[in-house]
Amino acid sequence: MKKPMMIGLVLVNLMIFSGCGEAENVANESENKAEEIAAEKTGPVPFADINMDVMDAYAEYKISFTKGEGNCMDQGFPTNLVYGPKINVIKTEDEKYVEDMTAVDFTGTIRFDQVPLSTGSAACVVKTTAGISTANLTCSVKEGEVSNEVCTATFKLTAEKA
Image (cartoon, rainbow, N blue to C red; front, top):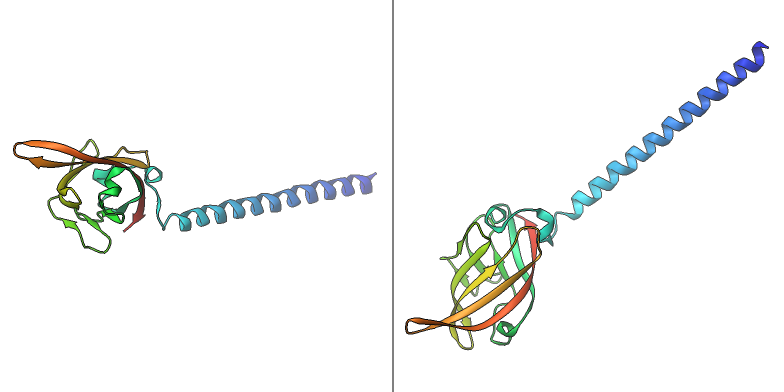
């Protein structure tokens, strides 16, 4: 009677220990997956993924405006525009256009001037929203005391850790 009970205890212990090994493997796989995700996040990610507003994000991230669509693109609006990182400046990546007088506010609006368009030098406003990876752009040219809207566009926003 002792032998069957001993064999039963040994079998129970083997089942318990074999289960622990599986749990350890699952934990290691989860840890490896988290490291892979963190490594992927070092490149550009959709702006929504960083869960910050543009006013806070530019201190840590380069925010890129990509895949522009709208009539501003027909007028020569820059296709490689970036905002930040670490400085409140909007520019093209090749720095052919740089606006030192860039303004940003808590509503997610970025304002900048002197954008060279085919209709003349324009003042532009980009509206962003935390948690959304698209931005709307409006550019206008001042004629006398009146600002006339000359074009609009929509951009995809990506963020890359500086």
